[in-house]
Image 1 (cartoon, helix red, strand yellow):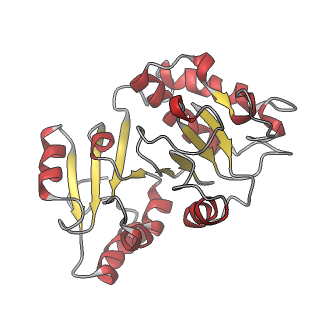
Image 2 (tube, rainbow, N blue to C red):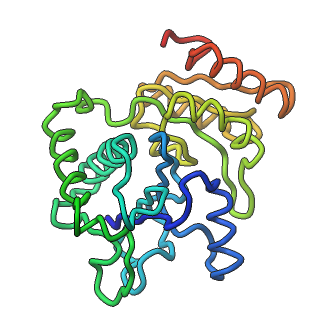
Length: 248
């Protein structure tokens, strides 16, 4: 697992990062598999099996986790490190990855870069902080063991298009509750709760039944149009309720 920083203001939208990778760098898509915002919200930005452009000459066997921000002079805040620890601990469990294989971008061979910031290995060494928190997660010290993902927000994705409007509609909701958000039914199956955003023309009813069969508590949030879907999500965020039909 390769840990990155975005080397840019943490508030820059993920869409802008993806656009930069595609238009300016000529990559086929965003380089990272997961992206963690300042509030700890975790976004899945590529399927795990996707070989993305994120660590030169080492892409075929790595997953990229980007912590948004520039950590040249100071480490990421605890909220982001905690979220990264939960995510990486789960990935390590799923893929049987040892501690030694959690590396910063700069630690990979043939990669002359400062990523994920000078504080990764020097000064406060947030690599050590991250590894300590991963061990705490694994040892059950933060209550995360057992259910690997608590809440997954699922969007649709096709080969040449994706649920951009639904994603934008959910931004306030995701920022409020900080669930894992992504496009993979297989990943969503590991969650206790799954919120599907949008109608069945996106994420199908077959996929919904698959999730229910895996034991997930599934709720679909779909208004009569994009604006109505956004209203539903914004109302939930404003009221502090994650779900319409489940407690919590």
